[in-house]
Length: 333
Image (cartoon, rainbow, N blue to C red; front, side):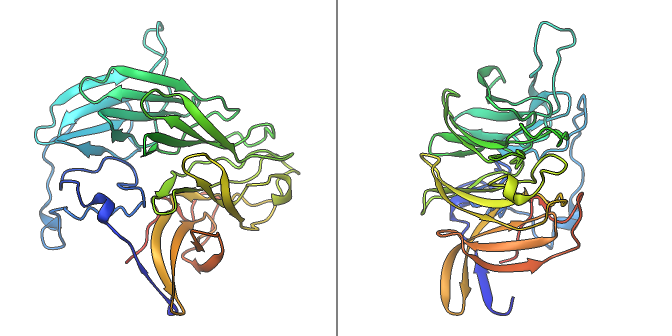
């Protein structure tokens, strides 16, 4: 807007090589800006296909890359590692439950995360298990079944200071008022659950977390959005405490810093399904640490990251139960 300007630091991704993109957000801020990329406006038109890897099912998540290898997952519960330069598979594993043949598995729709020599996987639709696989050969180092009433993981894992953060939500059934959204923090080395923050508090339940959490290291805080309340007749914001909200927690303890609930109406399905962005914004000569988050109602909200005060909101597009702003929403800086 005319009253503000925005900037974002890419320092957290500046140490990556041009081939590295290790998580959905790239860095803790969700800048999605690869400072070392060799792709420019002058050469992007020359991109051609170099290789092709057939998968057993469709791929809807983002591939991630690190140290010359690319990792990705499909809707058959398969995780792959391949050479970036040649496309040759290093390994392929299925996260299904033996001893069935073929193994029973659930679709993986969230993006993998690479850190600590591991591949972190949120599995999946109809399942709520987090895996840590070896980057070298794909064997499971640990697997943790999350204690939740929800039945899906759409959020991608976020790794910060030895912790893994991930949210849970519904695979589609929004009639069960006892299903509660939540964010979990796990020990990234062992898979032990260190704390849980429940978002579906109230008679309606719901308020699933299907966006990916981001972190502001300067405030030691994590940020994420929540979805709608569940249940016909119970779907008002008064019946679920943290529905339709932007939430900040202490990254270490999970204690609530603040939440900002957007009054979107009892019959709306206007989730916060996109991933927040962290940046600084100057409004009327005052500079704020800010968090921005888009909603399915088509509005991008900008809040003070420290206290949760609403600074600005911008109507980007037409709101829709199936559209608006979802996924990897970003901004120009």
